[in-house]
Image (tube, rainbow, N blue to C red):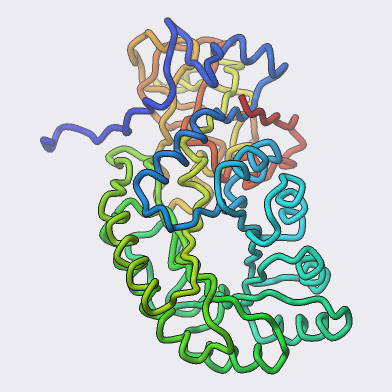
Length: 412
């Protein structure tokens, strides 16, 4: 790439077009708008969800279990669909647990992580018979008391805060001081407390980071996590049955990013699985993914309300914004704001004729969905589509801000 060329978005070729209209779930966009009954809305393509899981299974060893981290998208219809495709569900609250159970997921294959589990949530999880990822000494004491009071078995794993990070990850979930998990050097003491409390120890959960597009970094983190688990298992009160190596698989959001190459990751997991069969023979190895499974299967659709020019810059003012899609606005972890891939969904056959800023209806300059982005010339009534919107969208946004009308979510 020459110094004059600007990086571009990876092609959003998971969605096709028919003439001027984008197809979502095989439905032309304008017809989908009428079917939904309003804008703005999120639409998730069930065929793309199914295809992503199939592609991932083809790239990974058959012995590796796949769990869906439903915090990425907890819409009940999406969870119901994913529960039929994956081996288990990972939840992060009592509310998510209810959705996971309603989906028909096997409670034995549901796990619960989170640094601030309430006593009621712990009791709820024990009653459901799911696996609880312990993240503090306080949880051991509370779970021991629940076991004593109820006589119910308490299935637990230890979420470990490793002493290393996932290099190049969007959010670092391990390494250094963290609110997540138990520091690796404290785990042997915690394991002793688990044994004294009579809890049913099953294994470890290690999650070093998220949103990584560097396969070599993911391979390194998974290898280090496995080696750490082998060391910690020497202090465990029972053989390891469950080993969650986390996820971290990223998707391309911004110009210059490309889709993750899974080949080296699959090869490394095959080597880990072979070593585990010898050194940790009862353990099932789990990969926990959220964004990677659902992120590329979703779009956010909003309608242009107004077109205005201010001192040479054209603005498309829409009926949606950061209150519905905080991450696309750049206010969900971005240090320097970058555009998500976007399109005028009912002008897909037209070239990008102008650089415009797509903004929402809110009274704040932060309400930007696309900044100075080349798009086809749009008018009021046209439909702006934000791609890569299947994860951390509706439930990760301040939907009550300024009391604007709410959105709708559909699975098509």
